Image (cartoon, rainbow, N blue to C red; front, side, top):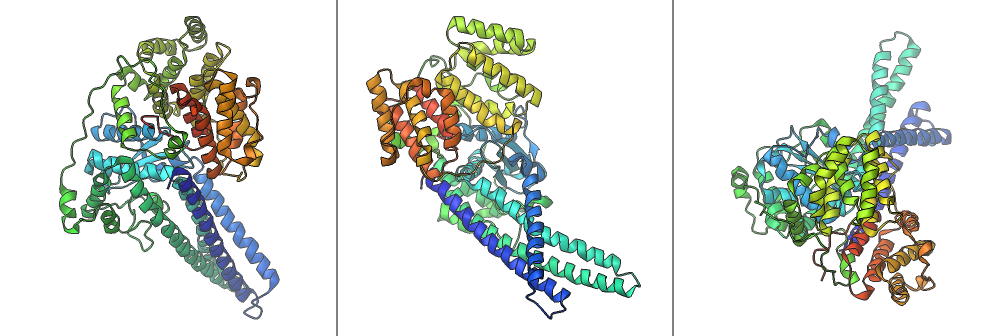
Length: 629
């Protein structure tokens, strides 16, 4: 099953879940109606329409308020969830070897999968072996692991766990998990209201007034009934939550093996949980609400959100013997895999163009494999120390982005440096000059991945610093009155992954299931790619028609637009609308883009990065082009 099919399946499952949740709400409304009618009419008229209307309105109001409170508490995305569970943000410059190893594994997965660096957390007080990923999408997601996970697992095992969490990200599970939690808050609101009424009745019951006692008795009965109904509602809500979560955990385990090609990594992590004294338990009181997000069951509960450990292990290792799990758990963690020294010397030029078929590109969307992970590991290891350090803190990351945007043409470069010298802080200008020699030696293929690593540090800018940073980025790009493919791809990466934090917008949901309304935007995007990737008019038209052919008969009437009508500003507007399409349409669109770019049989490095930037905007991350043959 490819990325687009997994995304479609995730949306279908969310729809089914919402339907089951709606049935549970209907059952709650019916129960509250009969409770209210029996108290108000003393059992004489259980079908009073006026009471039914009040029951429906009141129940929905309480549930919607609860859902609103839940969603508001999670509006900050994965970072909010990690902090609610007691997570501590991991400092990039940490000297703790286990934390460095963990951060390095996350960096590898981020670059290999084509997703931005997440916020990285450690559940410091948790000795159990566990982890989770949370967020609305890849713009606000976080990955967290317990201290037990860091202390007890080897690098291969930790990589298996992190790969499992990244598979949740790529399989569309994060938003589903956030919604589950919000909906659960809604039903919890009924139980909370019942408890409040119950306590009011208890205080009012001390009145000696007969009428007061009758009112107190009514409040007591209604509060007790509401409390019981709320508990029963939570019972079914958690049962629904658990059933869906168990299915997704098997998919995440299988995906982690697919990513790493190392079933023993995640299997041994699960074996250690099976034999470890505290297992995967999470002690934080908020763990119950987020239990469905964890790598392994965080609670010993009737409503297991994960399949049994032995079942998960046997699917990965059919020869598993539960009796030796204790020995595996007690064994010392294997040392972290050493990374061979690497260098970019002699590689600062363009890499050879990729020769591939467009279908190969779409098949790799939302996926990764050991070759991508190995490439990411080598790339990180080869980064000069000054650049690696600069990418880990906001000040250095800002200067690093400025250095990446400096033009190769001396005249333009001098203009850009003059602008920065006049407008940027002197310390930032000095840091830029310090990093310049190292950036100049970087191969093109390493620049966008380096920017990906730096986005985590850039998110820690203050609002004022971010405004100044964006002003400088725009000035550097506009210095030569034109924008090349790398500048566009880098700017889209920065906008895509910084704007949600500094200029938050409501989560974007798929709205457009028909291709016809999006055809004008498809024409803009394909025309731009045809012009940028080919010089001769006949080649441009051939590339455009090749891409249009992928979209099907409805697109055959489209014509190649003049360059003035499909510049990168037009592409920006078109991508904003295309991002609302369903996964099925996005699949065809990305294949059409790849077909247009590769119509001459080659994909140049700059074209490859532009394709990745387009796919990123469409929420379809494509790993770096390592070997697509």
